[in-house]
Length: 333
Image (cartoon, rainbow, N blue to C red; front, side, top):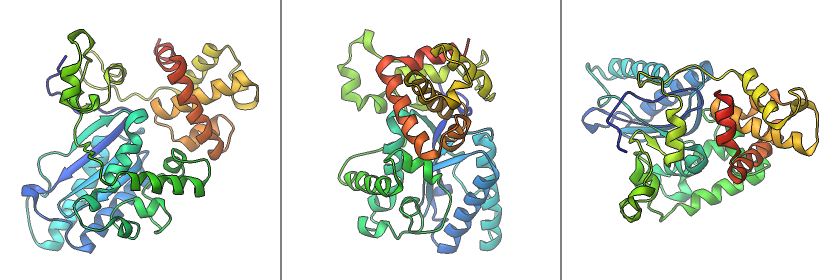
């Protein structure tokens, strides 16, 4: 099933790979002060909004961002970022007119399958174009790589949450993250688009599938058929995306009902069944409610480090026992 081009998809909890090029592919970030202006503006906007950043890279004529939508919409955030930078740039360089090529491109991505590969893809951008070597990347100021490794003081990325995807402690996470980045050298990775071909692993894989095994897909989405179907749950009858964030209390009530445990037990009890429910709660609150891992942990009465472990456990439980699909249906009843 091939969907025609429609409006941009956005809703709280959506992970977006955002790409934007300069008009006529001109270099608009060629001077360090231009990159600094853009990056500083990005950092300030993130502090003032509910948007979270998981990876970033600024090249000479384009940039990549990996953003998680909260209550602040992607369109509002990007409008403020691009318009503000364009006004400043035109004033400094004494020019007029559009600065960026058409509208920015955004692909909504399946976090379970693509979050770590996208972080690597974005942070290796300068190495792929031979701007720097892999050894020099850690000192390169214009990606989030050095930021995650503690080499600069920027706070663009949600450090605790991103490192939590790689290890249990900061030291372990940084080591595993660095190894993961190094493993990407020599691999052909390209996540600039969405759709079934990219999600399936190439056209050869798509053609190999029998007709009745082919999945629903959408060029605005990077993920398999089940993920696309989950995204479509957010579509209203007019074909646009509902921006209403799922109510946290209702979600917790439904989770407690699903696991047959009291809502208060999710935050206090340490029994095995409650730990399962708490882990799934943290995973779903983070994924579908636009809540950061740290905030989800606080809601369930645990520290960020424990929340990272719980989130991984919740993800595994959902994958092993098909809990996520059943629970997601349950939440939306």
